[in-house]
Length: 427
Image 1: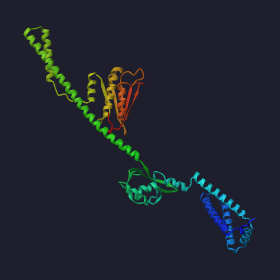
Image 2 (image 1 turned 90 degrees about the horizontal axis):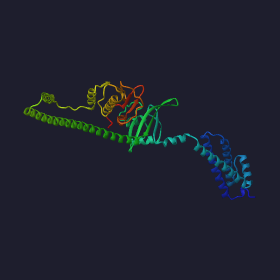
Image 3 (image 1 turned 90 degrees about the vertical axis):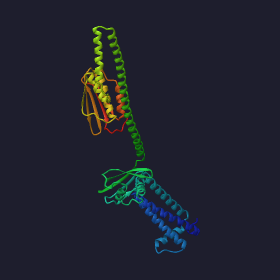
Image 4 (image 1 turned 180 degrees about the horizontal axis):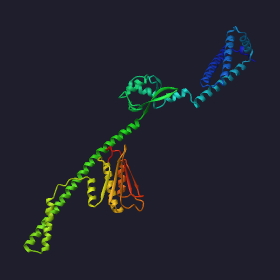
């Protein structure tokens, strides 16, 4: 059987190269084991590395026909030279298999476990920007997104976090925790800066969140809101013009009717003078003429009244009392919603409750306006069904961003809750 010393020098050199490669593979696996804090195979890898080193020395001596200064290496060299060639081949194949197993085990562990490098890679791939720094501004950690924002906004690398924050802020002295909005390549980021405690030291963390979609949606809503406000004002003016037109038409109709009545009365006077008549007919003609004269003498210019004044006048004519506690807002469309509630509750008090007094309590909080309606009439005999005016009232309140609540027991109570007056809604 062919021994290792009998194979050609080229084959001996090839075996030596394989030994060198296995030696470096052993070193790499040992480093990975130590970095992962796995010490199970470290001793075995150290023994393998020592064996490979000695084997490489023996192969070099056999190829160069030289002896080393160490007696044990000379004995190993003699033993290797007389060993059948398949023995070192099997040994190297076994070492290679062990190295492959340990390497695959390390790679699999890195995929299934969290390591400092995996954490760093995940932070760098985040779509949000992160920067952790000391109160002096020295950056301790940053990811690629924050570096990208810094280079886009300032043209420089993020080396001093305080300088970067002051550069992107319109006002360098900002309120604690207040977000800074920056525009980067048609993308909008919201940058916030907050204190952060870690490892017993006081640090600060700066985050940048991509709010492009929310910003665009907000801008579209703002444009629609401005359009609604403009349309609301136009509708308000149009409503006033309609009221003026209707008032003028009613006045004209009244004048036409008065003119016709005067003409008929004059004809009746003429007929009475020419033909005569009874005392009753004379008295009736006198009463009609006095009535027309009083109307002509007391005629004034009809002034335009808003819907609230009209409701108050109507209630007074019907001997109904409306007691308002609090101040009625002048802002539309909130005033219109509350006045509509007064009208609906007054109608229901007359038709269903049989009362003669409606109480309206108006309260204003930091973020809402509340109107509560009660009356002194009978309580509802059954649950109130929303239809007609109540359904319209709920729709009007909903369009303003408000709600209504109806209570039947122990007495009728209707509550309208509207958002704070801002003239940003339209009906």
